[in-house]
Length: 158
Image (tube, rainbow, N blue to C red; front, side, top):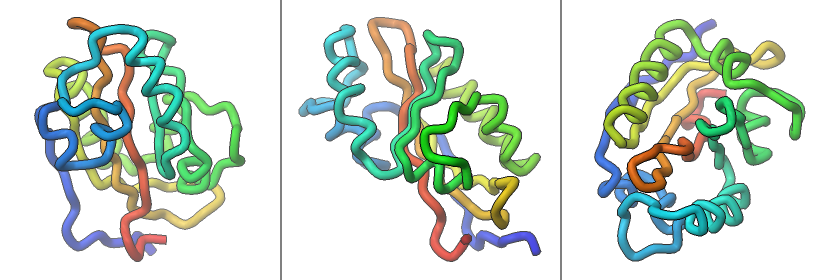
């Protein structure tokens, strides 16, 4: 049976509204939500991010390499610490969810915006479920180097 989600979330938002949508602003350790401007700031983010439940990142500068917290592996019903590619992960999204995610992802990268999206995922070894995906670009100067955010199950979906 396909899980239903009564009020799915689907929207894009400017980076200055990051704190309104999730705690990544606090993760960055800054009073402002301006784009990261140097590699030392990115290293600080890298140090604190993985400690957050549901944290993930996609390193755009390193061929879309994924880094996940343990909870994200659990959401996708994959062994913790397994090497997964972005392509393999995207294949676990329902068709409509994957199309919406790819569209918002491209828009986020092009326009330096964050996004929030509820997606249906279909793990190979678990029942289909709904996951909230929250993402924001990490920028150095005018270059987006990563997408980072949080993933968590939408209540009642698993």
